[in-house]
Image 1 (cartoon, rainbow, N blue to C red):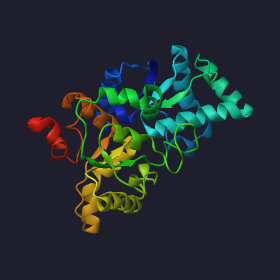
Image 2 (cartoon, rainbow, N blue to C red):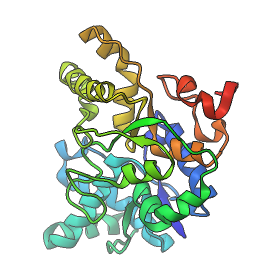
Image 3 (cartoon, rainbow, N blue to C red):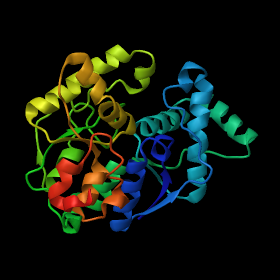
Image 4 (tube, one colour):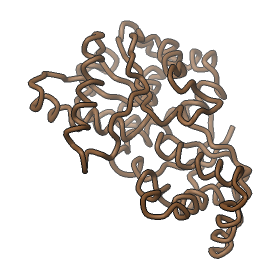
Length: 292
């Protein structure tokens, strides 16, 4: 089982622990990830506001590079996932934009036929590897660890074959297989504010307060995520939320790949467990002792 791996910008910068833990658990599961050579930023939400054509061509170049490998694309970032899917969907469904994308690809010496499938790493773990196989790899069951799964707004929207747009269960089921106690969480697909922190910080802090508040109310010891933007907002701005609203949240925000690696018995360094801003020491002490 091999995939062309598109890490995206965040996983090479603020979300290196997501990249490290993804590579580590995939290696442990026997899944090959070959990083696409010379990949570029997907454009995310920035490009559509400047040029709709660029917002299609830029991610299409990455898909063209993946096509050259003959492998489907594995994506970890939710924003990259939805951006690549949008470009492929427009190419397939709109002849006018398909011609424009093909013209742009020809200008840079590439061809693109939208043959590759775009797969989120959570989808691959749950549906390609399968939960039975995952259960066989568990060395440190996460018994008693109370968590809420937070998917964010992009992994299941627009509608796809992978996850329900309002009530996804893939991460829930994975965490249960790892031994964690998955708590009810009504905000699991609510937006975190994304990149609006730079333009509308007050609105984002309100959103973070809602997300953290329900997790705290449910008694969660951690929030488990699959998106670097969600993780950064909830992890990096928890102090700002506390100062603004006189709260006292101290909730670790951890990637599902990090917890999967913990359950598989992988070393903390391979999972980037010291990179999280809200420390994981208290959360994972029982699994690693003083190593964290």
